[in-house]
Length: 204
Length: 432
Image 1 (tube, each protein chain N blue to C red):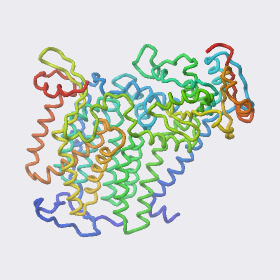
Image 2 (image 1 turned 90 degrees about the vertical axis):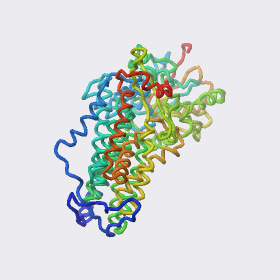
Image 3 (image 1 turned 30 degrees about the vertical axis):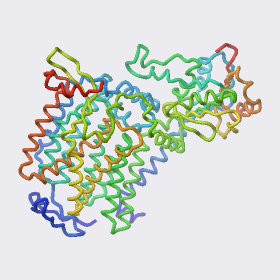
Image 4 (image 1 turned 180 degrees about the vertical axis):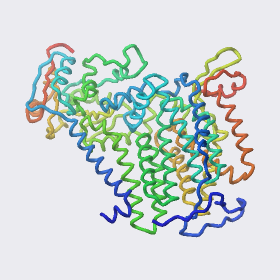
């Protein structure tokens, strides 16, 4: 090692630079995640309240699992983040059912999203989303990215079990019957979810 | 380290032969070098000032045909604040956001502040291309031709008025090549380390800089092929360093909680998206794209604002096929001469240009006109070499004619009032 450093110091520094960068990158990623010591469960009336409750818990860098036929991902708020497009340019868009997931991603509370569509809705919705030029098939459905945030679309049958990391789980109350009870139980258990939001009661 | 023998600055670096004669190859295993021509202290200022003037002229006026500031600027601010990859393309590398944030911090958050990054790098490209040609060919002629034609090129001036990241990417590409040639001259690995840092920064701006990195890496390994230890050292420098720089540019994104595996998935998705379906993005620029047409057709975009029936003011984006058509023949000529004379630095430069252009020709995704920025400075370096080599003492005549032609085109891109009749033939080709 000493001889290598003496004869090729630049190469040794290059390796050291890469190792330090990888270590910093891994550390920065871990530091960007923040969960909760105990699970918090909310029942909310609408998307805005759901958004407020989730961001209010202080979670950061979690995965979001959405049990709903709406993805909550809208290109509409794209407009708000462009300068000079309209009067609301550069402002935060109002959060509603069409963009709740987009806003959760933007806020940093979630870093990845899995949208679990009801089986009955899958053919029509998957056809709609697959027409996007940036959608690609995945082993459990298909995926695309919302400004770098990975969004996976799947169904209850293909979802599988929680993968160890505790998630933020959102369940649309009126859609609960479309999913197997044991699947919802598994995903909303304290071992699987930091935050559980059941939204319902008001018409969407 | 083997000391490299040098010749005095005024010694002839190329044998005195006509192109048709067989040149005498230098002794094998020995790089006989001489220093580049000496530069008085004011040289780089003299190179930079005309370029700066043309790029800053009417900087406040810009055709919105090519300027995507409305997505570049918020993306820059969001990225440093929260690592958010939008609203600009999430699949493009993020160092551009950092540089734009620096520009906004230095020059202000307004249209001038956004574009001054392009002005700075557009000017710096001229200076670095001059130094690259000086380092590669030692004589003033190629360096002067490179600097003058690059200063006056209407496409480079036009792109210098925008917030596109091609300008900083090409700046780092040229700087990396210059460091590579210096390392070759003096057999100094630290120069190669600096080259690898620059190329890594280039890749963190535009993926196409991977092509020059591959060419330079192969050249470094080829030059050192007689020593395994030196081959390994070169391979490590030109792989680990750019990767580290590239990864560093993603730290704000990683801070959103992503793991290295998720970073790899992002890279794979970004690669996967660079296919034919890319044409699904609605872009006016697609209509003036196509690398196969860069050197053979007029590609003109934008609108002219009329200040009267007989005069017109323009901020167009256009290529210059009249001069650009010389790029490929000049690069092939440099490649042939470089191989015949065993000049690895010439072969590397020519292969970099041809590799980049070949990549754009075969790329599965649509290639837009602004990607031509990657090859134009190197193209003028090639033209500078070929002109001096073939025309000998008559190269100033070529430069004079080329300068006159470029001066005719420049009013098209700097928004000054001009007689409509003088440019009617070109305006008729503009895509609006």
